[in-house]
Amino acid sequence: MTLLASLGLTALQAQPQILGENHALLQVDAQKHYLMLPVQEREENAALRVIADNQQVQTLNVRLAVDKVDYYVPLDLKRFGADRLLLDINFRGDRRTTGAVKDFACWREMTFSDTLDTQNREHFRPVYHHTPQYGWMNDPNGMFYKDGLYHLYYQWNPYGSQWENMTWGHSVSRDLIHWEAQPTAIEPDALGAIFSGSCVTDGNDVVAFYTSAGAHQTQSMALSTDGGQTFRKFSGNPILTSDVPDFRDPKVFWNEEAGVWNLILAAGQEMRIYSSKNLKDWKYESSFGKEYGNHGGVWECPDLFKIDGKWVLLCNINPGGPFGGSATQYFVGDFDGKRFACESMPKVTKWLDYGKDHYATVSFYNAPDNRRIVLAWMSNWQYANQVPTKQFRSANSIPRDLGLFTYAEETYVSVTPSKEMLAARGQKLKKPTEACELVVDVKGSADITLSNAKGEAVTMHYDAQKQTFALDRTKSGDVSFSEAFPCVTTAPTYGAVRQLRIFIDRCSIEVFDAEGRMAMTSLVFPSVPYDALKVKGGKAVVYEVKN
Image (cartoon, rainbow, N blue to C red; front, top):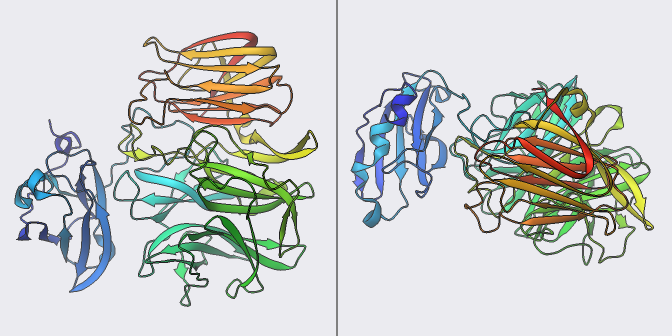
């Protein structure tokens, strides 16, 4: 049975007009809501232009199937308001190896549908982590809290499960665990794809700031008057430009002490800080980063906020992470609305999380009770496009609250699971399941092993003398998709660990020192769930995590 038949769909049997060995036109009657495009991930992206009434109304890149369909993605036909559309498609693959365009599987397998089937068919889709309904997701964007709702926007590809067509997807939640998908928030335009950014609330309005990624990266803004559901782009975009190639990811916030709006963004291997009175006109104030921290890759996705009297600057970097690829470093210091001064020596590097799969960490604007709540993208650029899922790729971390602690005369950021994770804690279980929390009380050094009947295992070791925690996923399940995936990660614990909280959710393990001094986030892909637990040097309790 073909994938098309298994989904209960009937093929369109489209008849393309072949214009050359790489070029075709397809006439489409917009009688139904969606045209389901068949995707084959190993193929090159085809460039697709949607034309209505002789006007180009959308462009996108999609890996149209040549001889095999991996999954389908929807093209919304009704949004264009035309009864008939023309698809202008340029294929980029080598026809000597893929064959003639007229014989491609995509023409046989395209279909119309009035409904969009987002039923989960993925073995590894998390139970209690945020994921997109379908397609690729990376950085969390524009997060804010307003009127009882947490809003999460995210870098999204609606037309495939690999990075492309960057758009802002949108989800909302009342408890940071149960997320409801919303309509697409901000789509690419003539200035480029929509890269990462932030949102602020100003009275009843929500203002979004994002990077327009065209021939060069510039900063743009958009306004929502309906609580963040829909946005109207500012007619004066772009609002900030630069001659630096990597110039992106604006984070905007109201600085009460300075009485101004501040904006911080990444420019190569430094952060640039601006100020404004009206959110439209921005004055450059200073730069931070030269010789400070890790410079193994491009700096990205900054955040700047105050905790307990000190300012924290988050700096995501790729590559350069402590175990390769992408990771989140941070700096603690002072900020006067114009300049950030780091209190540590320049060569000191502090990591927010010591796992391989914690990146693009940013915080919610206007979170209640002055909490500093963050989410991270739970993957690594070394293999994010290759992990063994198809319908979707990538999840966000569980919500985490940040604080401060001091160790050996240095100030560090603490990371603890948000209190909402305690509210989701269910009944005690006799053994681990695919979605659970382990609470492990330790006295001195400890070894923790999660395993299944297939011989797959994750081993963890806390060394009380060295004050380190290590996680070994080299035999955790499927590790074949990337040489960078099987590894052992090790973190300092900055003191004695008394209790560990370990969150398991189908394809991820997140480990926290209960006092917040250590966090480690790791993807795993076991063929069957880990259902056996062995603890040496401690006592564990297993809890259900309610969805």
